[in-house]
Length: 172
Image 1 (cartoon, rainbow, N blue to C red):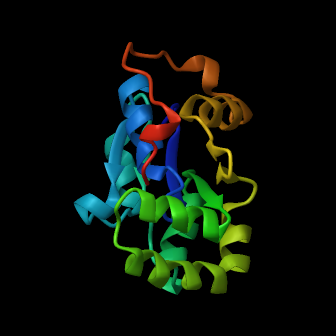
Image 2: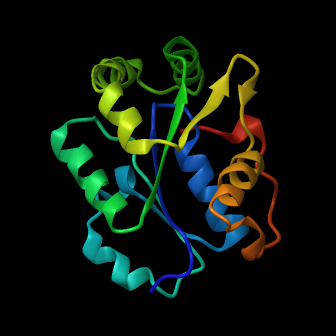
Image 3: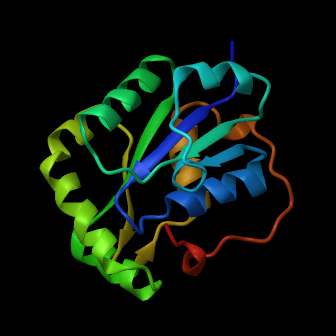
């Protein structure tokens, strides 16, 4: 049985998913798998290979449909802690544009998220986290301390020395 957390971080574009995954890898010795970059669809069978890891974080900014939500429900039923990073649409869009991303991608994904919001909110509850506001991004450390403490894990994980992630570095 895995004694360390396996997290799936999903959410709206530009809310810090990949940045948080990278931060966990750099500072907390997690394995980070960016689903969007690796094109690896998470399946419960993968969990067995990670049982010796300090922790595993999957980041996945998916287009929400029944198949994707079904995969997440299955992972959640197998003990994966699922988190949704959120922000008001206009704020996330501004950040997305500011970082130089193709706004067409944002404009394609956000209406689907809004359409499926009731299902998303139910599936990811109680881990829906507002990570971006007019004041900026929530820091990775604050997300970690807040959510991992709620899981009873924050003090059990040792940090590796690394450069500090700043709010300006948050990108996905």
